[in-house]
Length: 184
Image 1 (cartoon, helix red, strand yellow):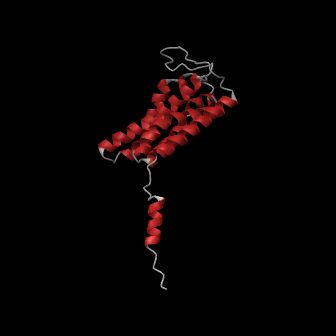
Image 2: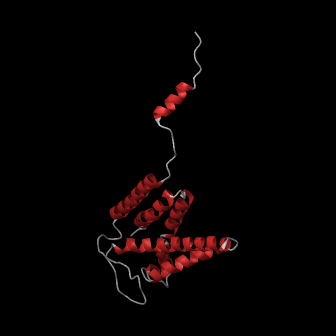
Image 3: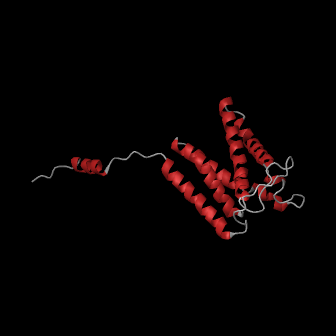
């Protein structure tokens, strides 16, 4: 798939995690985590920038997903060093999850086209492909992006904490109750 398709898949997959975070009131974590997943979801396509790497080779494997997860842990390691142990472990696991899930979302988006992926390469050269649509199909890419944005939007609306607001009847009652009586 092209970048729009990968972004759509990443949004759709992260929506499950985002829902869990949003429904518990962790809005900042949900939004920043989604941003990180979106930013890292194109990492596997870095193989196109280096001549010594084959496209859909080692960067399109679960091993690369693990490596990106470890890379994310190393990026945040210095900020976690002075935190309490439990909080540091939680932060490291969260960073690992975000990095590795971004690559997994990329792999899942690539599985639907005829070229597929070899997720266990070099241990196994088995090719996995659903052969649904070609990666170059713009309609499919933008449909996947629209679906991802739609799923993320529905998740946001369904899970965000409700602000307690008085009903219209109660607000009108308070407005009229608090008025000064008119002198005749």
